[in-house]
Image (cartoon, rainbow, N blue to C red):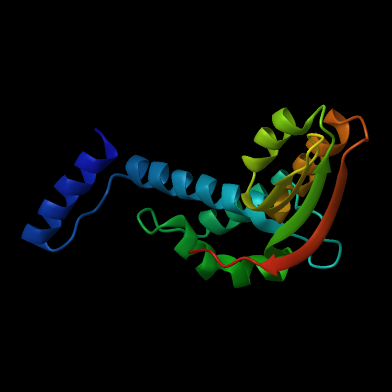
Length: 175
């Protein structure tokens, strides 16, 4: 049964009787979806507060799974709102901050078009300047957890001819 139709039927049932008890498998499926959504958000934005290195996917998954097993994830609340609620529990065991980074990149003319298209998929372009010779300078706001991937694209695909600099880090607050 599609998710939207299930919600509609549940809403009609609740309106008539006041509450509904979901089958355990449906409840577990929804909690697993929320767990995966929370893990994705944390992978993108969570970094260690001292080193600013992204947290490993394995550590994030272990922590969120532990929280889910304690019944602290709700099957129907948005993942971003649940993230706010479970942050204190997570920070006790795994220190992290959610942040974005403003990065300045320079790409030589030979690589600028292809690499810029790939880099801009990771964040929001704040400023870009195309120089006459085809060289590109850009400032891009990206999630801090994706810094290694973006840096890898800039440095490896340009064979070290591109430049990369983190200008500013700002806290990220889930919507």
